Length: 245
Image (cartoon, rainbow, N blue to C red):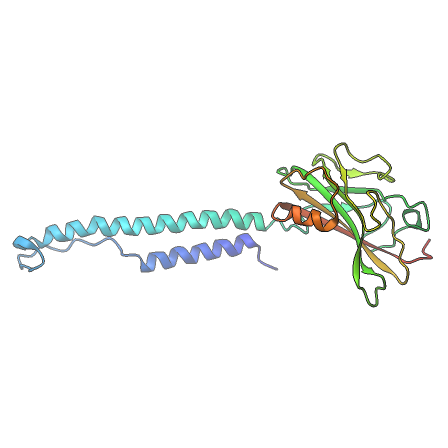
């Protein structure tokens, strides 16, 4: 079983505490007082020097442990967040096709060219908006792909939304949703229309900690605006080849 980031972080913290304890100066233990005079102790009061050193060593030791403990707490919080894998924290599905299944012709250029129904769950409570991108990385030929073709760009989706219905591109999107520019140069949905072979179509949903500007963004502009603000993401991939039912 693969260890979680939290478990690895706790193990690292434990090792840090052990090493800190090992290298930090331990509190001095008072020794029986002697009358032997030392040049470094004016007046020959060696007991007073030892008593002065003991609190200092104890303070250094306590500070080292406190700093290590604080670092461990920070690592623990960061590790717990890392355990919420962005690829699995949310789930994105479609009632129209299965993951890695075939997209029905109804949602392509050979059919009604409707945007497919999509459902999602697991949106982080800290999300301020959602974004969705649909693209084909196999253009023009999956045997020798040369570019990614963008079919749909949405952002500003309210985080309370749990999905979009069939044909949502025709003015049925959640209130506040913005439509970006696809690779046809249009601000709407364009269904699969592969010139040759079976292509993969990725539907990617992002939960963001910001609200994006209202202007029409391309996929590249959206990705740049989202950088450093993605709380979670989910992916649904399906395929299509001309002639599929």
